[in-house]
Image (cartoon, rainbow, N blue to C red; front, side, top):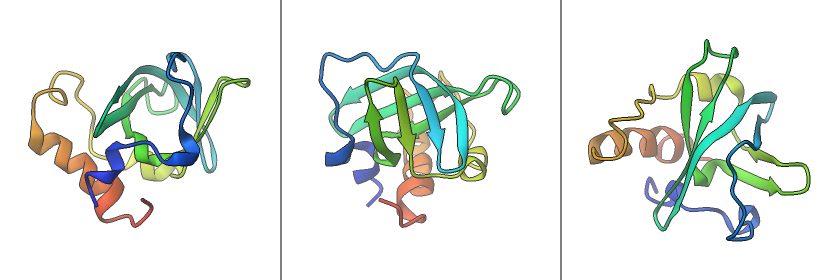
Length: 118
């Protein structure tokens, strides 16, 4: 289950040539920020969202499996988590996430394994 959270849902797919950087990201209860970085790698797709002043300028990592929809006309992404769920997620470390499988598993468990959303 934790691995499936790293892939896009069929309803959330988007044209392959669309860069999501700068898209607004909306939780179920409001805006959380804008996409700073994204990956579309198979079994490792995610968004890094700059939260601005919402959580004191922190970045959050959202696996692609949390995405409900990508609206290319409105340049927004809708995720199936509340602001509080995202705020309570493991802390994102830009340097650690690329090379540490245990770190990835921590996020996979939080967003996929225990939540039952994906």
